[in-house]
Length: 208
Picture 1: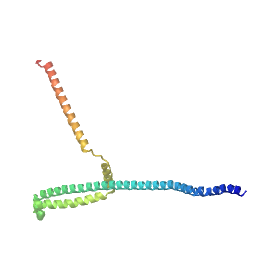
Picture 2: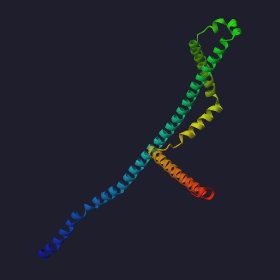
Picture 3: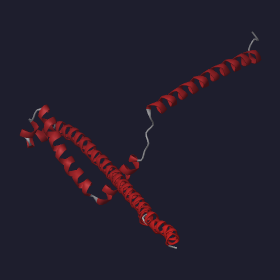
Picture 4: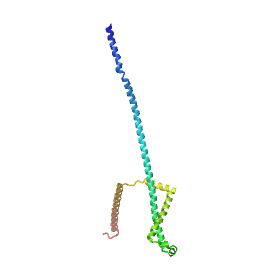
């Protein structure tokens, strides 16, 4: 009886030992599930941050492009006003010099303003340019501060900035096309003229 009880108890010890082998994997499986659940969340967070960073960079590039466009348009407007001022100063200087030289040859002007009439021709040119430059500067500044004129110039500069100029290759190809077309048209008209001259000579001439 005692031996039979020992045999019966031996499998129980073995069965009691089985939980030691099957028990630990349960926490491992739970930890793996937690890790697998955290990985998609981390990936989603990383992709969201990358997307936000890309949108931020796109916004910065757009702002830089807008700023560059505005700066370019402003540069064109300032260059236009500056060129207009220089041209106006030159024209006014020439007009003042011409009027001054013409009046200096008048007797009444020489008697009324002998000091002004006695100024040399070179000095008249210099003084005329100085006076013309001052007048042109005042006119350009007043025009630049005019709201309507400034708005119009900004719109013109914006439209000109949108113009797409042809490349060197496009200009070269277009030039060759024009030359070839002109050559062909010239030869065609020359041959046509010779043909009708020949026909006219046969009809109205001596037939030779």
